[in-house]
Length: 243
Image (cartoon, rainbow, N blue to C red; front, side):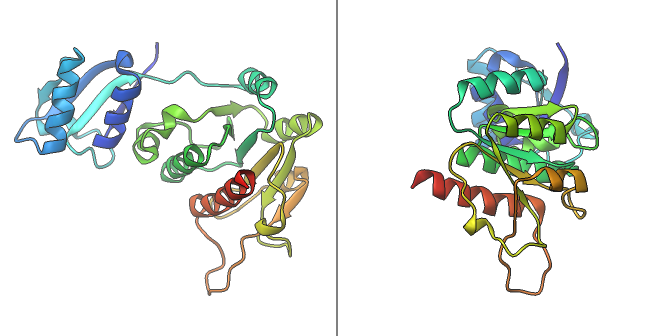
């Protein structure tokens, strides 16, 4: 089974809580522990994980704030079109999120965290030109990288069209429209489609959407960060689907 490194207290805490049997190695930086580090160390020992104390130099390869802890874990199996088809058969009125070539791991991590919070049934990304799950995504997602269905497809537009044929409405977020997210109907089977950082939706992705909607803005900035915009739109969908 493929392995990968995760780091940071929150990410490691969540992984150990959800999947302790998938932890191959757990390392702590030598030195006095703070209360949170000590609690995690004690929990790991109680679960039989045999945490190791290592020198600070062992964390040099970690690209981010590791907080003195990292773990070698089993990589999450990649979900694909077959998993999406099975998921569609189980759900009555799914809410899917499509990310059109989002490439910043911090954005993907934040988006997964919000997707988990509002109950998104699946986040769908293209196989190429998109960031996948990595250590930074896991850390930012704070456990949502394990709980949210992340599905990687060969062709995002083709997948959207196939789901449209199955009855799903596609709502793409774009600035150049008079319609807003507050005039859209997010009830029923809905896919929210978000563009990449900077460039937004690609032409073919935009054309595949049933509706385009914008987030109303009255300030001087032209657009929001994709993870922030996704959060705003998802919570409008959540509000409607709860009422």
